[in-house]
Amino acid sequence: MKRIGLLLVFCLVMWVDSLFAQQPKVDLKPSRTVLYKNCANEVIYDFSKLSDTLNIRFQVLGGELQLHPRYMSRVRFFPIENSVKVVAGHKKDSIIVPLDTITFTVLEIPPPKVTAKIDTAVSKLTVFVDADSLFAKEVPKDARYRIEGITVNVIYPPKMKQEPIAYIDSRKSEVRRFTSLMIDLSEFSLLKGCAIEVVVNKINRINYQDKVIDVTNEIPLYQRTFTINY
Image (tube, rainbow, N blue to C red):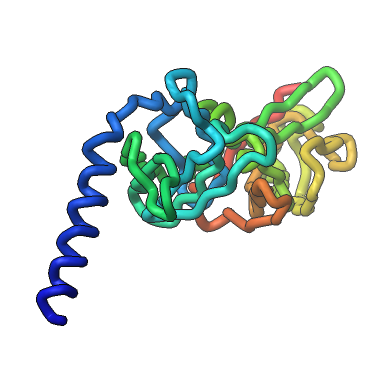
């Protein structure tokens, strides 16, 4: 009985090996080989060389996947490790016979770029937050940012003698907090020579599930000072 069992195992191994040997490897040419961690990365495979696409299956190591409801060639990968290995193959008698194996490089989410500008014509301060351009192109649903907190500190010039009246003011500073990306500076009592310090306190990222994620501590603190000369 023991010999019969060993013979059966040997035959099974030989049968599986024969399946792999009979199935030629095919370059499925994925649309990209770089993914972003914890994001919805859509990859499009080239199935033009395959006669049977109904039995295509994927195995993923280092992440998860989501199949498109209509197109088998479109797959979403959700990496949780620093690399993701994906085997694409045909399902044959409950066994996946590999056609192509790809190891994807996984990148961390790059920090967004924060900028601010003052439009003196309308006395408006605008703060912008923009995702990294390549990140936004590859995973647009994960690259949505929103500024939730801004502190504007207006520092008034010191009281000086024999200077124009605009410079004579005893106030030291005026601090206000906003959540709007556009701030009406007419709310402040601005004087020529004032310094406006802008600090972004909180930034959120919205992911593919519309989940709001606080990324304030993941990006450099944005702080900039403008001088009012009008």
